[in-house]
Image (cartoon, rainbow, N blue to C red):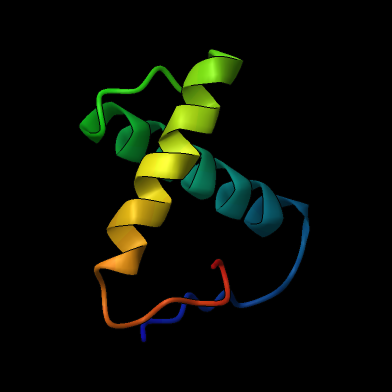
Length: 63
């Protein structure tokens, strides 16, 4: 498993981490052809992601 390391935990690095995960969410939703800015679509995205994770060998306590 890969880890992200930051030299210190300050506002800049926490903000950078938040933007990173926001972009990851938007990209994964786009790949699943789901609008990440529409609540019914977000629920559909969660269901699709759970189905994808069920097929993988490693699940991190989501199911």
